[in-house]
Image (cartoon, rainbow, N blue to C red; front, side):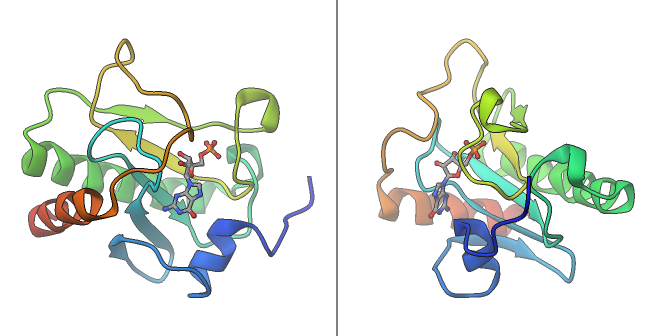
Length: 137
Ligand code: 5GP
């Protein structure tokens, strides 16, 4: 599938749309999910123009997973998370809704996840959770 430069995450990466950011470097951005499936739901995206995990160059995948682990540790510490679901949807058939590869970190249980990309979260609450996670990074 061709990469759509106008997808929401591409626009966030270009600074055209806002995001509650947790971490950013030259290669990766981590930010809060706007429709969380649990409190503390975060997303980690490589800055490479790739739609799915299958399109992502292995070096970018390797780098990104390091940051996924770093953010996961911060979530665990900040929110006293007993477990974290790492989710990655590749392709519409899997339920992917934003066509830029991303990793979900959801402090929850696979048995208790809220509905996917279904309901806007409370922005003040998400911002407060983000501040805690950032402080633990
Ligand atoms: P996917 O379905 O592609 O695996 O996940 C996309 C995720 O992006 C969903 O969890 C959804 O809530 C989130 N999302 C969709 N639009 C936005 C947005 O504009 N900002 C942020 N921060 N998250 C978004």
